[in-house]
View: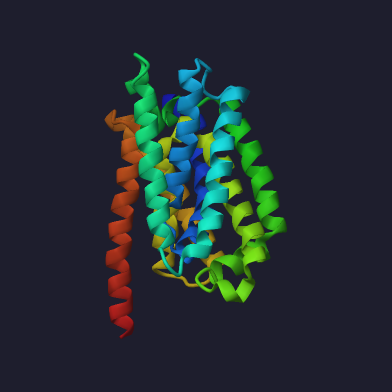
Length: 276
């Protein structure tokens, strides 16, 4: 047991931070019905990291982070701009196109390096098991800064999320400002988590806890609270299973959340059938 706490304390702390910050974004992403925006932003961050990798810049160095941030800034601006076309083209289509192009571009760039396959694997699966306390503190610091900004502009961001499909309600100039801020903050968080968590794990933390919470509660803040508590509990269970069964940590976390989602579906079915 002592070995477990010594070895898994930093990954557990990282998962707790992931649970809270990404559940918040996940609740808003669900309200906006742009579920795969996280995948696209994560892939853009990974593409930036791949560009840095090809330039022989170490991951998680200031230079690498700046390049990744630039990519998510461009992505955030593009997604904000294309929202004005939603009456003709669903934004999920635009998000999907960006994802597949960014993923293919990363694949092409990685082919120029003998270690490209390992780099892509790291971007997809992460290495949260090997996260250090230094990385945990840095991620916590970034998350606190983002959380403060989200707290300051919470009402505006929530207003955009609740009326996302009606451009006329808020006006184009308004959503340019607040949508772009939302995408930028999400993208910055992803940039600082992409190496340790990976695309698959980030997407899992963003979508599954918020989806499970939405099955039982309607109000946005309650979904955030329920989803965060659920995410923390499930991630700690996943880490425990990974440690004692000697399983890949990222895959174990994703599958643990997947099992939780199916259980939540069944429970919600019984709950609402009982009310009927």
